[in-house]
Image 1 (cartoon, rainbow, N blue to C red):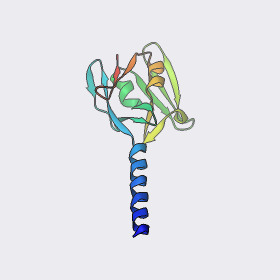
Image 2 (spheres, helix red, strand yellow):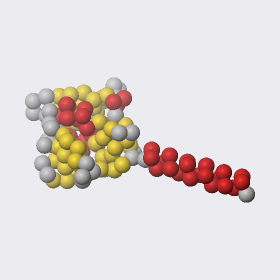
Image 3 (cartoon, one colour):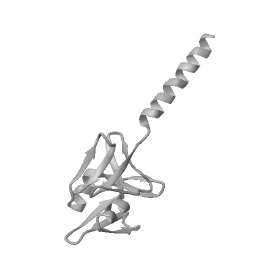
Image 4 (cartoon, one colour):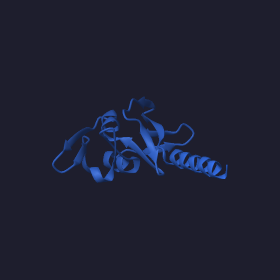
Length: 122
């Protein structure tokens, strides 16, 4: 009986730690309009990540990918910024970058709306 109880407790603890490690999925808004992101933006280990291409294109930027250097380049009308794959996370083959890095690259104000669990790009 004691062995069964310990097994159940261990299984519960593993389930709890897996739930805590899971990503929190969030929405992205540009100018107040929700952007359809696939994969969805997320918070992982306290860092908010947004899909590079979807967020960049939503604000009119262009994205180029270099497989040789593993660098995405985001270009707006007045600037280009390289983003290394090592600065990102990969989800289903898509590159998601930290929101703060995206803010710097796009030259846009990006905020976290805790009440709506959303990233807002101005």
